[in-house]
Image (cartoon, rainbow, N blue to C red):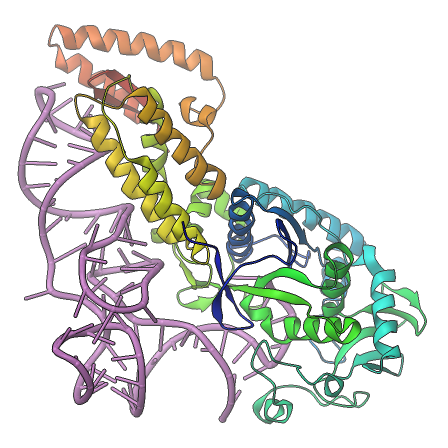
Amino acid sequence: MSSLQIYNSLTRSKDTFEPLIPGLVSMYVCGPTVYGHAHLGHAKSYVSFDVVVRWMRHLGYKVRYVQNITDVGHLTDDADEGEDKIEKQARREMIDPMEIAQSYTRSYFEDMDRLGVMRPNISPTATGHIPEQIELVSRLIEKGHAYESNGNIYFSVESFPGYGRLSGRTDQSALQAGGRVEQRSDKRHPSDFALWKRAEASHLMKWMSPWGEGYPGWHLECSAMAMKYLGETIDIHGGGMENKFPHHDCEIAQSEAATDKPFVRYWMHNNMVTVDGTKMGKSLGNFVTLKELYKSFDPMVIRFFILQSHYRSPLDFSDAAIRASQSGFTKLQETCKRLLDAPAGTGSLDVQSFADKSADALNDDFNTPVAVSVIFEFIKALNSSLDRAEGLSPESAKEALAYLESYAGEVLGILKSRDEIMSQDGAEGGETLEEVMSVLLELRKEARARKDFATSDRIRDLLIDKGIELKDTKEGTTWSKKK
RNA sequence: GGCGAGGUGGCCGAGUGGCUAGGCAGAGGUCUGCAAAACCUCGUACAGCGGUUCGAAUCCGCUCCUCGCCUCCA
């Protein structure tokens, strides 16, 4: 079997993954700024990193996964009049900023839970780590990498030669030419970024610091919390591509300037969700919230939709595309149900070759679309076997089920649980419905036995109107609820 | 202007030198009392133009187009 390769944004190549400490993986992913409900873009990002974590755990690594919650310091823009996103929303809803942060944090976790995203081991908040951030700023000032100006503390980009290496923006003078970086009077260099900002009297979220009342800059929290929980050098840092610059370049600068150690060994960046070819973003107003999407689609279908494309490719959203995924997703669950229901036979199936191909795909920079395609190839082979008179031996069936539950279930998270698959309506009134259905099926069976097809077809047609579909198979009639 | 990623069959979406990606939709067939499901078969796909090569979607050059970042955004 192949070894795990990860595309490292820093080296711009697929590198063999070796954790710093054998067997242990430290991983940090930029979390949401909690001032609104999560949208499909969040889903793509966190589902992608969820599979990263799941696959590494499958490989036997002990993963410590930290994902922050940004609840302060994230400004609407970099200009002087930049407003804190949380505060802005708080004013709009006329409630306390902390209430905004907490309620959208809960909303975020609800949405992710439904997508089958496993919770991070630690979800630290920026407001909960003010002392750590102040400490980091002090360290940077002591080492001459930061300076105070009017109560604001800035990181001096010129003091850190490698600044901009991740994004390829190393020439700061070139950066100014066509860019939109505002010249700030209290900055020594236009590219310098804020570590700590002085709070005006009207500012709601502020803390006392050695430099007066203020609040932390956005980039700072990730460095402070990543290092607190994962150490000064971490294995993997993930985030959205749009955060490569400036956010991640700033993280590298302030972390490495403070410790003189490499901050991150493997940088991973996931691509965007687009709508009609344009990025889905909060500021663009073209986003679809997950709560909205869940009204029309099973969250698991959305997860499946996301994993059918690679995390580094953009994913174009459309109703048609998700509906196509819905059909494919249903086929996967139905095949699994068929396998669970299948009578014992004698045939066999080479499950191992599929498992190997799946593993190779995931080892190749988490190539979930290929992993999904292997599962569908397997499903085809499985259905062919089950179509044959000899069926599948109990051993092969068990192996097949283990493969599906491992790769489609445990790793990709696109397989419903055995109970969900077997409980045909998956909802309320299960037992009663089962009993009523068995009566109807018995009547229909009798009608068919005396070739009274008018009656048997009428039962089937009436049921389909109620959203219940019948299928006549060799082993008898099965039924399932259709949306 | 700078940095970066792309243009694949009706749609979505993998694939980095020769070998079927896969899903959805469509056509024909097998099965079925009829359906449904499943399975089998079917698409002369790789933006354009040159070049390298025995051979290119895949490498090189040019052209056209799209998208992201350079302000906040997963």
